[in-house]
Every structure is written in structure tokens, then in C-alpha cells.
Length: 452
Image (spheres, rainbow, N blue to C red):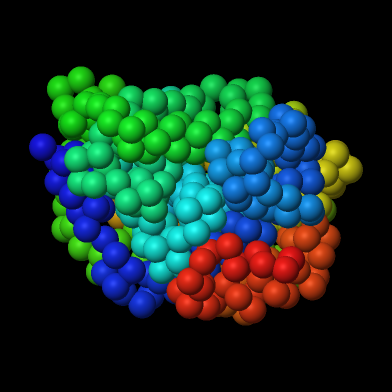
């Protein structure tokens, strides 16, 4: 059974199984997610989630990544952090699976690790395992499932269950049953995009809770389907008839694991816009473009991007983050796509609105073929026509943050400070920046937050 083969591979992973680059990346993604979640916690949507968990249950097992760094129960801290990590739309993304793996893996791994006083090395191995199952299942169902199903919601319980199960010390059989219970709770529909609603963060919070529940039930002896992924009535077939079960076990090796092909985000918007955003940023800088001199922009890209972000008339804060027209226009007007580019004042700026009306997204046969040949290549080509008749063109296949064009630690530290200084305080952030690159040296993951 394919599910069992994948589960056995995940069961065997230890810190020493991982190549050094995968370990470095796991620590980089952890720092990134801490900053993104801290910033998300003070947004209006983050406030709703904080209020939801405010009553607590009296347990102090794990840290919530917000201004108080308060301790909550393992489940509440993990779910709150998972929700807040997805608010800003700046969390990491795995291109080939179209999945935000960090938001549904790292909060569970850190919370369970804190509750059980696991070492930094054990937490890093658990993160690797959670990323791996999410990436492989995402690749097995995409792009066929993507029209209806938000992949992060679909695989979230699987990522969290495996990360938690590893730290709980589940045996081989119980880890398989944790995966079975997680798989039967797969969920997350894209309909919220039609309204620009907040459901995306519910997908990460719910996936995390479902995963933790699955691991705990398995530890108690609860059984589940043993081939939940590729069985006749399993997850892959339920998500799409165009599934790829071979992706579950293809080239199983930690030398080509998901931690090596994951990307980070410099912009606070949907990753499907980022290559276009980067084109706009480069063209703006190279040609000192003035928006009022632009008469037309054609954004050539692949079909999944058109389906997801061709939104010329967004009307909610979240809608703007999923509008290719808005993101390109805002980059050309403001020169950045940080959270301040998505405030009501920014989104109503008449300069941006006028420019949006001049932007068209089209599926380009060449870029679509490129995407189908390599699902990591989310390319855009901008053609900008100016009032003097000139046409400026720029194509980007790998925007900054892509694993082919990765962040440096220095840039990640800057991003962390930018996002989290106003929430956690610069001294706390500086302490975390000092500790995170040495996570594998911690004998208890609680020491990461000790004294903060």
C-alpha cells in the first residue's frame, strides 16, 4: 500500500537523516513563520482568533507567538499560531504541491515539542516529516484538485498529525493510523475567494487541530484506514480523478526532500502573483516608471495563476491579496507590497485604481507549457506599453524567495524584525534571531523562548 510505504519512510526519519541544507532551511522557515504569525496576530483577523482562544483551558503547555508570548494548551497554541501564520499571506509555500506547509506543520511541531520537552533535533526531524507528507500528497492531487480544494486545508491535518506523531513517539503502526485519521478529515474549499472572506486561516487552524487529534487518538489505540491516501475510496480519488499516486513514493529520499524545494515570500499576497510583482518591481526601478505614463499592461502567465488571481475588481482586504491586477498596480505605484500596501487607504488610492483598469491577465501557451513541465516554475511576463509607444517587457521565472532564488539569512532576519519588532519587541526578536540558527543545540525546545 502506498500510504504505508510513505508512512514507513516518515517513521524512520531522524535528525541525522537530513542533509545539512534541509536542516538550515527548516530553521529558516521556522524563523520566517514566527515573524509572519506575530504580525498576523495583531491584524483584525488575528484579533478574532485571539479572542476565540482567549478563555483558554488553564493549561500552559506551549507558547502563542503574539505580544504576550503567553502559554496556552498545546492544541490552542498550535491552532492559534497556525491561524495567525496564514493571515498575512507571507508564509512559505511549496510550489510543486501548491501548499503552505509551514503553517500546518511548524505550529504543531513546536507546540507538541514544548509540551513534551523534546530537543531541537527532534523538532527539526518532525518538521521535515510534516513537510514531506504534505508536499507529496499535494503533488499527487494537483493541479487537478486546485479549482475547488485549497491544498493547505486538504493536507493540513496530515502534516500536523505526522509532526505530532513523530514527537509523541508513535510506533510504526500507530503513525499509519494517525495518517488514516488525518486523511479522512481533509477539507478546505476555495469558495471563500468569491467573497474575499477569512476562511483561509480556518483551514490552517482546523487542519492543525485535526492533526493533533489524529495523533492523540492513534496513541490511545484508535484505528483508521491504512490506505487512506491511495485506496479505492481514499483521499486522492476523492479530490480529483486526475490524481498521481506515484508522487506519494517517487524517489523517496531525504536528499531531495520538500525542505529543499520550498519557497519564502517577500510580498504580503498570493504567491501566484509574485513573479509578476517582481517583474513590476524590476521594471519600476530600471525605467523609473511613472504610472500615469502607462497605457496598457498585459500579464502573461500560466492557467492556475489566471484561475486564482485574475480578479480585476476586489472588494475586501483579502480579495486585494488575491488580485493580480491590484498587486501589479500597487507595486508600480508604491514600490513594495508589504502589509501597508493593503490598507483601506492604499487600496482606494485613485492612482492604483486607474492603473488596475489597464491590466489584463492572460494564459500564455509558452508559460503554461513551462509550468506543466516543471510545477516549480510559476512564471510571469509583463508587457508594459507606455504613452510614447514604447513596450517594456520583463519575464521572471523565479522571484526572490523562490528556492531557486532564495532568501539569505540576513534578509530573513530583516524580514523577521520588520514584521515582529512592533509585536514582540526588538529585544525579543533579537534574542530569537540569535537562538534560531542554533536550534539543533537545544536539549529542550522550550529554551527557544526561555526568559523572553
